[in-house]
Image 1: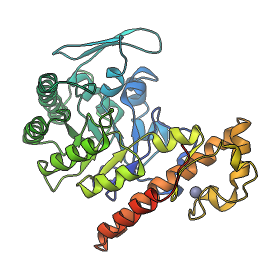
Image 2: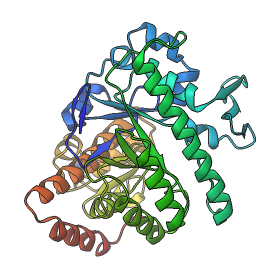
Image 3: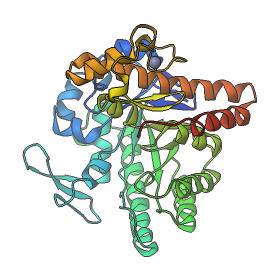
Image 4: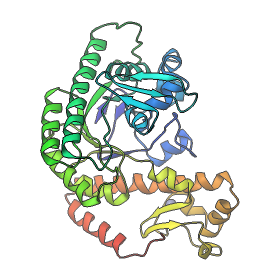
Length: 367
Ligand SMILES: [Zn+2]
């Protein structure tokens, strides 16, 4: 995938830097881990420090000191999660800030403007995120609205590219915009959404509204069906997913781009992803365990530190514990996706997938 701030090898995993920083690690760590693209959250940056302030600093890349690609979400997902603090109508989403209760209106145009000011390399359209479970009728109404919003967001981006739009500072003229396929767990709606969204002519496409509580086989089924209706020459981004197994299984179904908070959030809670499954470092049985978290991992944490030490850091609340766990988990994710890329280029992805799955299912994991 080619962006205004360089190329990204796909399939790719994007660490989540909500506030312009990946919790627990520095940009230098991310460079060393081989992260090629970051995800940042528009909702949070819009509220604080504000897209205007970031535009005056020359855009998000300059403000946070990251010269490689950045993707921003539209802010919609966070707003839809503000149960009781938001209402949705055709114009957009009205919500109250979780910080000070102030009232805001996010429209498809406004979400596009904010991301233009942030200057991410990939901007996402504002979509309606439907809760699971929903009826087919609810999913149809929501999908149709998402489609109308997508048309408005695309029109706005094209207007911004054509010339100045009332005070919006475009900090990255090479910004791409991705459309988002919705439609819940209903194949017919997903097909209609994919075809109609593709007809709007975005640079690439994402699948939204999954990993929201549906069974895992349903998610894989929706992904497998939906990718078939998306252009084969454009990256496909599965939003907000998932586990290491989800990465492998979704690549098998045609996905190129992932983001997920699991490796970073779980690291801070003491859960490590390893080649043998998940490991909860707080468990008492690791108190005198001198082995590294994952004997097969080459990360800086595993090369130097024992489970006993990491457990001690966790139990005492030492901030180094969260950092060392995050370095390991991000390494595991980025290394998994690198091995997937290698397997694809050598034409042995299917055998890699089988071995990966057998390995994880054959080992007992900490709960
Ligand atoms: Zn490691």
